[in-house]
Length: 182
Image (tube, rainbow, N blue to C red; front, side):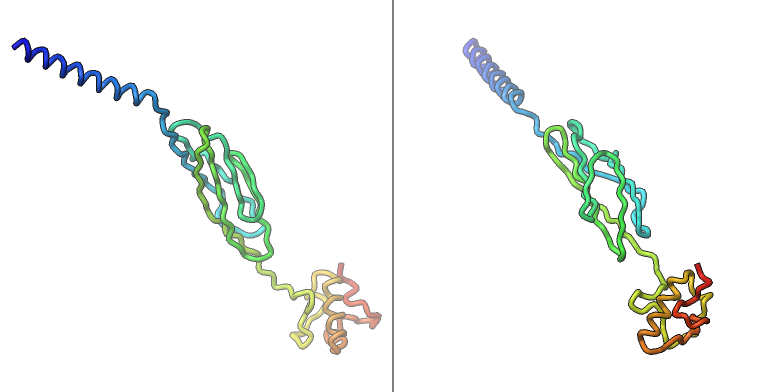
């Protein structure tokens, strides 16, 4: 019986030694850094150019530390930083921009997220500078123009195309159209 107790004691000591070794090896290891989560909201996701959008990355978090930096790429060649920021998109044609936020935590791990901003342009019924009006009609008069310069462009264009003063914008025939306009 005594031999059985000695063997049992040795077995218990071996188990305790093994458990202690396992616990000590876990204590010696550095904890694994968990990556942060990037998240942001936009004040607007579409609108007409120029469009100013505010961005807020307050929803970003790091489960085992803190976020050290916020880096923004606005999608139009411009960049920014900070937890909150704003940017103005100016374009002459409708475009969709990809906005990317990258957050880096205090241990160097990073995470990114992207959203899109759609920017439109206003429709302008004004004729192009190369053809400021349709010389073949419909009939125009000085009240159809906002400024004398606009009327003069139409007058000059029609004369250069061989139409002459088709709309009678130069009432006194001195080469200056709609002289009464601002």
